[in-house]
Image 1 (cartoon, rainbow over the protein chains, first blue to last red):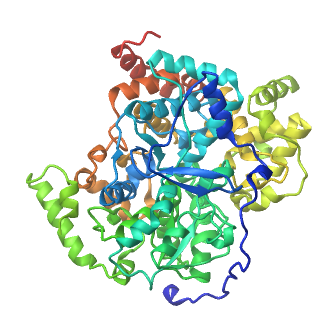
Image 2 (image 1 turned 135 degrees about the vertical axis):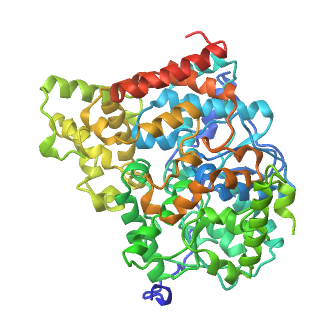
Image 3 (image 1 turned 135 degrees about the horizontal axis):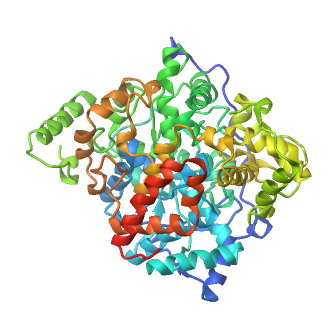
Length: 401
Length: 228
């Protein structure tokens, strides 16, 4: 029954375009100016955005540079651990577009999931972790791009704390000196979804599946656009400039419909500590305030988001809700996986959809992807791995037809 | 979380001492600017929909320096917060979620019962992030830990080794960490935990975990030539 529910109340679309304000009227300082001032005073090195880069507008009308390539990929522990097709799709997109990137081993998690969950850390430790990773990126010559929304938001918090508290900078500098690492602050703190946003038309040029019959709802990630909100990307052509443009801009570029729903501002229910040890809250919030509302108001084929915790919570919470007969059943994935599918990526070798919980096969069928044939190919890969014919999946094999 | 009825008694001096620690945090002045009592933070708050929880009440208690209420909240409410930071919608510019982070930190640092209770069952996650540098490794998806994730959790755990080898990026062929973290990188992380007092914080809430972490880290740091 749940699958045939039609939108009960169409959500009005904005008629007015809300242009960005003049940056000089912004309610917050442009922290990047302070970052450069500190470089002039010899406090740290500012790692510049490499050429080529694109420019975008942020919430208060400022311009932000987004690097196209030569990027150091700050991976997400939740993506790599539980949703590996998320990270793999980001890398695959770079490879398909012929863009140079670095996937480092000299990288730790930002550790912010634990910090927001348990508070078993403190500001100096969190700042030192961030600056160790930034220094590691600088040493390679590649510019950091951050996969996780929480890492992105937290690193912006850390940047503010370091700029405003000289005693914190001194403490972190002392710690890095013991490791022989320099103090480096990137010119911009960049989330991968901003890269997808600026690359969306290049992705669309290479689209091999027709998405015109696909409806996608978008869940914007809290730590992307609420935490240090002035860095988030906005575009007057997306939601009339009223919400962050990332993710939705890709949906539109690929010719899919945007499934509008009223609780877009609500969080997914992840809760950091809650998703691990108090999931009654996460399950309830994810299904009652997000999935069921999307289902009733937009009945989308898929929900897209751009953060680790949101994919996990919105996807995994639906199993228990379904067992209780709730109106759920929307596949969930990142927009990077959605983009990769559009460009013909293998749904299992690249997008790794078998790690996801809600049934995504009707979506693949609607996209024109023969999931049964693709699964057979992947099963053959698994057999070759079992038989020792191959040790690991390779990029070459992932792209073989 | 403990209900306010079960909040332990404490002398006024102790309540004042803990509030003093909250107030001394370098972020406190940036996060608390006053309160209009408009309730916008509560309207945006997911935890307020499911718990007897209010970011406004917490902000007000701190603004008024209401020691009894702050003590009660540190022993109960603060652990209900989802840390989504939807409350940053505050028109006054407060950061209730950030204030809660500070209150939690003080609760952990002082080994409050609420912190120990909130982190029950969470020790393995602290161990994982502090000792491996990645928080949620593939091998943590076990059916007994995630029964509500359905049969997929069983399938992932049964096929874990094989499925991880079926990932194209070379850094992801791991099961006990989310990606392959270099040894030197890990030692540098351990050095951070040591030098910033984080290990001492763990000791306040879980002495056994603290001992294990110290063992793991001291050996690795010595191997890399660090003198503590």
